[in-house]
Length: 264
Image 1 (cartoon, one colour):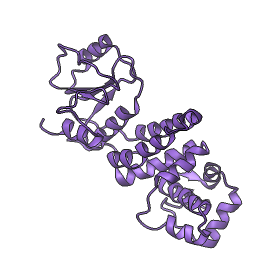
Image 2 (image 1 turned 90 degrees about the vertical axis):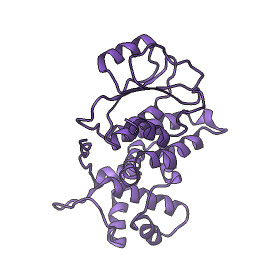
Image 3 (image 1 turned 60 degrees about the vertical axis):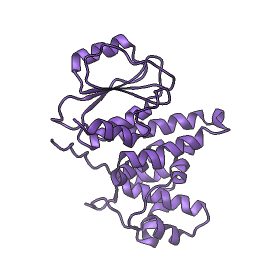
């Protein structure tokens, strides 16, 4: 099976990173001068370039400073090998509506930990934190975080030459798409092609898509109880989400990936 293509490296200028962090460019220059910050992105020419892991580390450093740590200690901790974004750092960016920064943090975590771990360790906890008692005051933040998550997941390329795809769709009336966005990306990491149709797909449209694609399997997401469509010419139909029947259905993203990549 062909391995998925590698996404091109994305880098930013110092000015772009300073805007992402909400900092004066002079502060960023001072941090480099005083703390000799190690950058992962290749440096060519006279201007610094920052990769996703560098933006991740800088936002961690900023977050630690805001929590009361001295700048030197924050720099050492944020840029140490193996450092990763935590939920608090991601939420700091989202609450400032620095959504490009949030997406860059997720990019870095995805590169280091993969889709299932990023979904479980960052995405779900961050969404849960914004959907608590003050959810009515956080609708803009929830939508912003959802955009950042989707943007990062979309940058994981689809594999080529991977055979018939898995068809992913939200049932008619269902508009919560992020879990299937994550499943598409997680399958792509495993070299498994998946085609996501999007939110609220009528059964007639699903049948047309099956006729056109002839998928290896169909995954239907629903947050309310549903009955799977009958007579679909496909070997496997998987119901996922809170509305699925419990026995034998995937309970997590990892379970779904395992179900769809084994036993074929």
